[in-house]
Image (tube, rainbow, N blue to C red):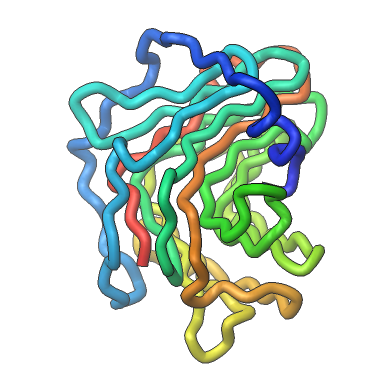
Length: 227
């Protein structure tokens, strides 16, 4: 993700807190059919993720499901993540879940994101996925790469459960298609980045840089899959 993950993730020992589960258990929600016929390449189980945080909002596995909750912490600078431990060649991702956001953050620097990335050291490589800014509750598709960061709004104020999918195009490696509940939304193009069949890591993360309240804001991810 484009924020300061590179300094905080590997700098010192990270203290993960034991949390009482506040996530809804929606494993029973059916996965929607997608508008792209690409077959799933690999499911990523709970055990495939490293869960870490820099303050007091550490992620945790949702008991009784294959899901992970990444709550938003409330320190002045708080970054929490569920990061895939071992990557794979991939052309896209899909998951069922939600971005429970809000409008209480001080700026768009506070955000939630689920994405694939090919650089988990400096976090400045090629990325594709979904991001919600917590000052305006706007969910967007996004691409990062080559110093560029491109977004397009999908919805505003939607905290519900959906199936989210993004899929890179083989015919143009700079383009990615975005879907929600199997419905095509749009295609983003970043000619400075490449997204087809990179060595990617699946990541869900929250950043909080201050605001009036973080209460109830979190990511829930179920049935995490790469293509």
